[in-house]
Length: 200
Length: 131
Image 1 (cartoon, rainbow over the protein chains, first blue to last red):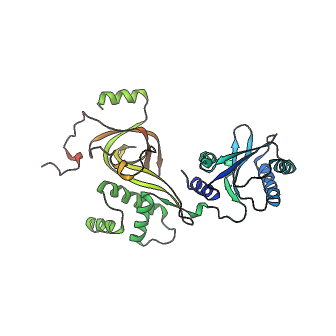
Image 2: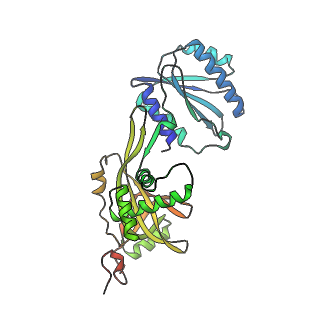
Image 3: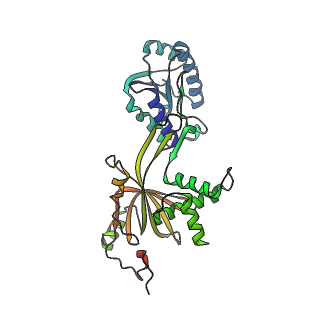
C-alpha cells in the first residue's frame, strides 16, 4: 500500500461513518486527458455552487478503452436529475450514482494501486473537496515500519539533520535493520551505540 | 524438502530463492494519520536470507504479509519455525533490485527447510566456530 492510498482510505473514513454515495462521471466520446480535467474543474465548480455544503473525494481513473473518467464519493444525498443537468452543462456524458457503505470505499482505492500512467505525472490522482472537513493528506501520514523505526533511531544516534547524504544514510539504516533482525535487538539508539563501540 | 524435490520445483518454473535463513522480525506495520490519530495497520514479517546474488553473498530482505486471521505480532512469531543457519527455500511472489540490494515478497507457499544438505564446516549454524 502506498502512502497516497492510505491517506485516501483514512480520508474516506473521516468523510462518513454511515452511508456514502458513489458517483461515476463519464463521457460519450473519448477525450484527451487535459480536456477531461478542465471539464471536471468546471463540473466541480457547478456542483459546489449548487450544493455549497457538499463534501467528498474524487478519484481519476484512466480506463483502458474509455479514457479518463471520474469517480466521486460524497456523504450527502443530492438530486441526481439536477446533477445530471449540471454535468451536461459542463460537457459530461453519462452519470451514475449508487449508495455505498463507508467500509466499501476501499473499492475506489484500488485505482490508486494501479501503475501511474505517464500522462498523470505530477497530478493528484485523488483529492478531497468541499468546505467544513479536514481531508487527510499524504503529508499527514506517518509510516510505521521496522525501517522507519530504525531510521529514527539512527537519526538520533548520528544527529542527522537536513537532507544531505541521503543514500549513505539509507545504506546505514539498511545495515542496522539487518543487524537488528539478526541479533534480535530492540530498536534503539543505545543498541547501535553499543554495536559501534564493540566494533571499534 | 529434499534437494530432488527442490530441483523438480525449479524445473517447473517456480519463483524461489534458496538461501541460508538468518532471522525474522514480526511487526505491526501501517500508516497513522498525525491529525486524527487514525491508523491502518497490518501484521507483517521481515525475513533475512543469505545467498549468492550477482557474484557475491548478500542478505535478501523478504517481506511476508499475513492473512487477516493473523492479527497480533505473537501470532506471526508463532509461525517462525525456521532454523537459523540452515538452507531454506523461500517461495516468492516478486522481487526487485534497488541500489545493489535485493528485496522480495514471500508468496503464500512460505518458507521450507531443505533437509538433506550438509553444512561443510558447521559454521553456518551460527554457533561457535569448529576447533
